[in-house]
Image 1 (tube, one colour):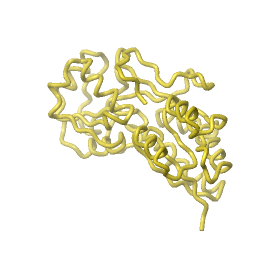
Image 2 (cartoon, helix red, strand yellow):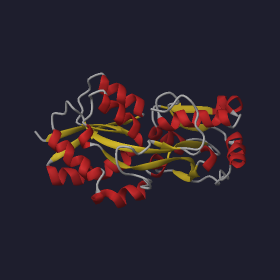
Image 3 (cartoon, one colour):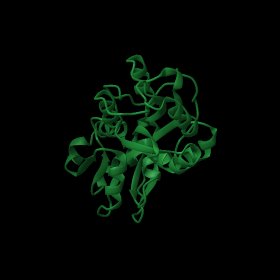
Image 4 (cartoon, one colour):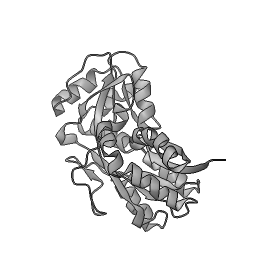
Length: 254
């Protein structure tokens, strides 16, 4: 029976993890058993006792779980920073989202809006707050469709009717066929989140977990992460803020 490494991972990092699975298997002889989804759901699974060796979630959540004794602080490593973006079906025209006013008009004109869980997913929480900030939440509520994670939301957008739009982390948009990235949210509504990996304290494979983190967050995968939508400005050290944003809705995101 082959060795397996169990992973709880934010959907924003699913694309890079999937791309590295075979390489890790070839180098270590171990396969990845990954569960991906909203960061809130990943935290709930860990705290409920689900078997896990490596966790990849937001930097702030890693800090909280290190403080709670669930993750090993000496193993944490940042994969990079991911911005939240807007997507359309690949075959549809590209509406303007380059300013706050343009984004408002395009969202109001959309046939439907696809996004992740507005309670447990980082991008979903933010997009819900953006709709309120723009003053259009009530106007578009009947056309809002939320899903457990951004990857599912983007797959559903790809299969949707014309003129629909979606919002989630840029890495999830870029890793989904059938949708096109229109761009990040305008600067005034920006959300940029650092995702970090760490070994779980109760890991059954701690050294294997360290090897995986060295691959997924190290120089060997830097170009892969960059191509997938990760950015690296300001990354380094435990004190890096989880998010950079101009607009700061409450409560704070997980």
